[in-house]
Image (tube, helix red, strand yellow):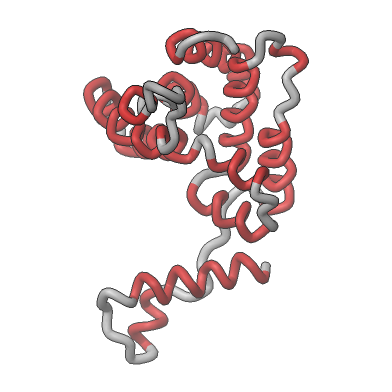
Length: 189
C-alpha cells in the first residue's frame, strides 16, 4: 500500500530511527543496517506478473553481505546484519503457522527474538498507510517469547566433545546428531 520497495525502505528507516533507543545498544547498529538492507533480495526474486517476492529474505543475504563488507571490516556486525536480513520473515511465518514454543526457541537460537521483534515492528509500520494504528502481532509474539525464553540462547548440554569422549568419530552425521539433541533440549525446556 505504501508504494515500491524504495519507499517502503525509507519508511522503515524512519520508523527504526524513532525506536532505535529501545534496541539493545550492542545490537543497535546491526539493527539499523538490517532495516536498511532487509528487502535487498526483492529485485532478485520478484515475479513481474504477480509482484510477489517469495524467498527475498534468503536472496538478500548475499546482497547484504557484499554491502556490509564494502563499508566495514567488522565480522560480528556483518554476521548480525545478514542474520537480520535472512530471518526477517520468520516471525511472521511462525505466527501464521501457529508455531509452538519450540519453533520460537529454534528461531531465538539463530537470532535474538527481541531484535526481530523490533524489526517486525518497523517493517509493519512502514507497510501501513496509518503506522500508528498498525497491529504488529509478529512483533508482539517475538517480545512475548523473548521474555519466556530469556535474553540469550541456551547453551547446548551435548557438545562434540561429549560425542568424541563417547567414542563417536567426527563426520558428516556429527552435526546432525548435535542439532537433533539441541532441538530436543530446546523443545523439552
